[in-house]
Length: 470
Image 1 (cartoon, rainbow, N blue to C red):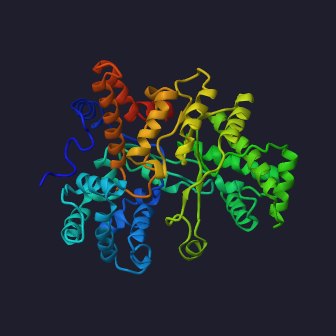
Image 2: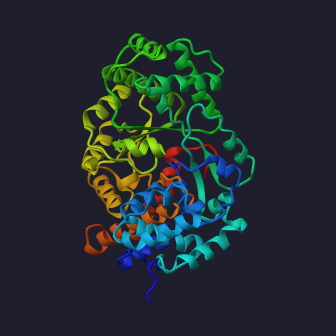
Image 3: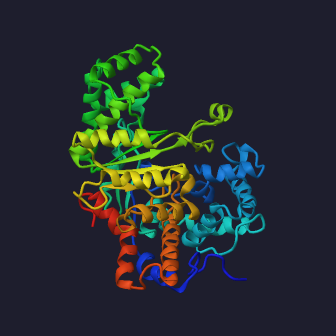
């Protein structure tokens, strides 16, 4: 039987194959947005079995398993690791045409050299083979980073984090750079005073500041931003339904802050005003220190109240939202630009209906200072599959400069997700290869090859300009 994941997997033309193998396959990985654990990296975690490294926090797989009629105890519940793996293995044959089928077999091949299709029949053998390799030093977290040629990994970190794991790993001598990304989303949550106030106290402790006013609040955030910078951070990140554009004065924002600190209810308008003020503040900080801002927009989170209460957030009950994006995104970027405080910015949409909105929006705020100052980010979350990647690449190609694109991210909580970069690279080369063979772009390797190489790694390295990263 022909091997499913072979050398020309997803490459449908000879030109696509040549582009991939010559210009993309060997490039290192610059993973500038993910959710993997800094603790696991710093402590060089050794995974006990395939469940721990592959299923432990993967809500993509849990969603598929639930859809296949698998009980919750085999997803996030009390079943044993092997029982959970077996439940996943029995689900995999039902994922045909879902990207999970591709990812599953690409990951088994790249990590463990396993070419067999995963199913209920092959589960026991694959479980045993993978576990034997996971027990070796090459498959610790640090071993995986080296094996997958990860040059840079940027974690997602709350301003209250002390970044101790980043400091410890920096001393290890490992060739991968692990750098933090500043995600201050909880600073906007005045609409939930109890949780907001609890977080403000954590911020006060982290910054060693007595937060007794709005002024001391923003001072504490400035202090943490400066601290993150000292630890090598050059990225911020925000996950929001949409941008906020009800701009208000500092006096109004301070009054809303005081209400929330007293535990009083904040109206929808007041929340938007406060969040708008704070997002401008964070934009100013990023511009001041030469950081890149990331805006992940459009997720409708925690749709299932019953299971949110039972299992908590980030367990597979989020979806694409249909929030209006264009007016507020434009207003936010324009406000920063008008103040000469617009940092390098990457915008990601989750609703594919917004592809052309976002791809045209970036052109409004390019200012000629650097190539691609405002970036249309890669296919994200529900769009990080072959079709979603193609949509994003086509929109950017038609409306911007694909050649300046900074490429793929994992956006993952799993150390098994690095083949998503390969998946993206194969998809990119297949698109370009088809264009060459149809005559849509020149059959000029010196023109096209470097573009492929740059999108895979070099563009991100040069755009982010992280100190010491070559």
